[in-house]
Every structure is written in structure tokens, then in C-alpha cells.
Image (tube, rainbow, N blue to C red; front, side, top):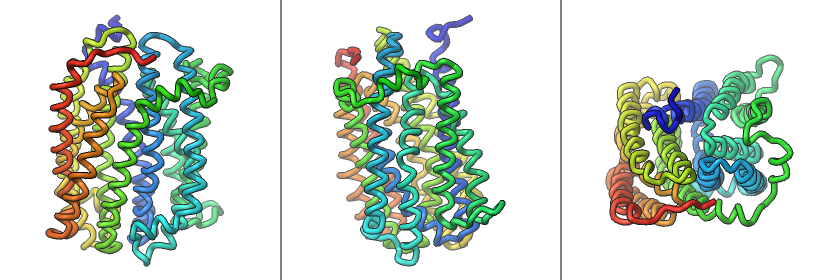
Length: 451
């Protein structure tokens, strides 16, 4: 039988990647179901109210994604060196910090939901509904963020199956509970627009319970045993290393989320119909973008494990394989998105005019996700060695100095379509700059373990 090191690299990628891509599809599918339920059962205005929360939710999720990215690199290196005690310590410290971020999100989000949505220019006809939904979503942030973070950390030890199974539980519960709360099935109270948020809370808790039971049954390295419980503390030394990588990554994600807030404010200025179109297009783009990000995460973790095992020479082939898979997988999804765009958008939007506008916006930018995937893979490989500041700086520069100015300029000239034209321009710039830095600088740096 072939050992993992003897398998062709593309097979190792696919074994790691397939459950993670399916997990991301399930995450997107869960959000899509909520969008379909809200749009079809409660109407376009309700969908606009929910859509206005996307960037705010992403703002908090971005923090734990960055945290998880940093911790996953360290866990990957520790796992590559077979240092299981270090894996536990990194996991415990990171989960503790993630829980505190979730609690802060719940408190701040609940208190400032209305002024935040008003500052975003949420249309007045959906503001009250949007505020109610926002407050409910903020209250589920602790459970949501810890769940997202834990699934990220599991991938650091090459376990992508457990997160997939947990997400299957979450999605199944949401599939049943969301419409039940909207329509008041089985004697449940009708919760209206807050149904999706409440169903999300129940789904997350049940999925987390399933995950804990599975890990304990399998005697997993990250099972919540006594050693992990003792590691649930703010370990300054470990978190310093985690934040060295995670903080720039989190800052990058926060800048991306803030830029989305600016983009959303531009979209909101065109009315609730444009906001609903934004929400529907975002749902479809996620199905293409998340697999591209999964490929980058796979490249980063495989690179970290190679470094931990003392084989940094494998990184070049890891990157080349990641780029090839991005071309095939993301390219296929882009083509599929164009072919099925009319039907896909019809799942969310019933208004004919809003549907036509959303389809036009999707066609403008969907192809550029392929370029986004290429630059993400290059950045991910560099992150495996702990090099994050320059790749992060490139992304932040492109967002602040290219995407936002171009979006404003083209919005003034072309209207709503101009806002979406800014995305391809930005992704082209990111790819060029990341490639130049990788080829001329990073490849010539010495690669060392971080833990």
C-alpha cells in the first residue's frame, strides 16, 4: 500500500480537498437555503434586510478565520513533526481566544446593530426587520465562531472528514427548522425574518455536540479530553506565534469585510432592489469562491506539514499542483455559473426586473474568481512558512487603493454595474503583485519551522 508521501501529490490534494470543498458547499448551501426561504416565503424586502447583514457577520468571522489560519499553520508544522502535545496546546489556546471574540461580537453587535445598519445606508423600508435579524445573529456569534474555528483547526491535522460530517448535521437541521419557524409548523411560533438566525443557533449547537462525540469516540488528537481542557487558556507564548501569522491574515480579512461594507453602501444607494440583487449574486459567487479558498488552505496546510516534517523542497510542487487544481475546479464552477445563472438567481429573486439586473452583475465579475484563486494559492503557500506581512500588504493595498477608488469612479460613470467591474480589476492586480513577490523574493528566503 502506498504511504501518503508516496502517493502522487494531486491525489493527496484531492483526498484532503474533497471533504473541505463539500464542507464549503454545505456552508454555502445552508446560507442559500436561508436566502431561498426568506426570499420565497417572506419576499424581496425581507431578503434585502437579511442581505444587509452579510458584511457585518463576515467582519467577525474574518477575525476567527485569521486566527484559525495562523493556528492551522502551527498545528500543521507540529503535526508534521508528530508533536501531539503541542497540537493540543495550540488548539486550546486558540479556541479560548475564539470564544472571547464571539462573546465580544454578541455584546457589541447587539448594542450597536441599528446604528451600524443605518451607517451602511440600509434602505429605510427594511431597516426595522434588518435590526431584528442583526441582533439575533449577533447572539449566536459565540457558538458560530467557535464551531468555525474548531473545524479550521481540525484541518491542520489533515482531518477534513469530521468538519464535513458536522456540517451535514448542521445543514440537515437548518433545512427542516428554518421553514418550520417561518411557517409555524408543528405548533412552533412564527419567527418571521429571525427564523434563519434561530435555526442557525440550534444547528450550530447540535453540530458541535456531534463533533465532540465523534472526536471522543475516535480518540482523536483534538478530542476534548483532560489534556485539551487544561490547554483552554490564554497561553501567551503560543498565542504570540499564532497571532504573528493570524493577525495579519485577520487584518486582511477585516479590510476585505470593511471594503464590502463600503461596496454595500454604494449598492444600497441604488435602492432595496439593488440590495436584494447584491445578496443573490453574493450567494452564487460564494459557491465558486469558497472552493478556490479551500485550494489555498490545502496548499498552506500541506506546505506547513512538509516544513514540519523537514521537507521544504516539496513546496514548489505543492503550489504547482494547487494552481492546476484551481484551474480545473474553479474554472469548471465559473463556466457552470454562467450556464445556470438564470435558474440560480431565480431561486432567490421573484421580481423580474431585479432578476435581470442581478444576472447582469453576476456576468460582469464571476470569471475573475479564477484569478482570485490563483493569487490565494500563492499567498497560502507563503503563509505556510510564516511569511504573511507582504502578501497581506499586497491584498490590503489592492483593496484600499484599487478596488474602492475604482468602484467609486465606475459607479459614478456606469452606475451599479460599475461597482461590480471593480472586482476583476482588483483580482488582476493581486495576482500580478503576489506572483512577482513570490518569484523574486520569497523563493530565495530560508524556510524554518515556527514550532
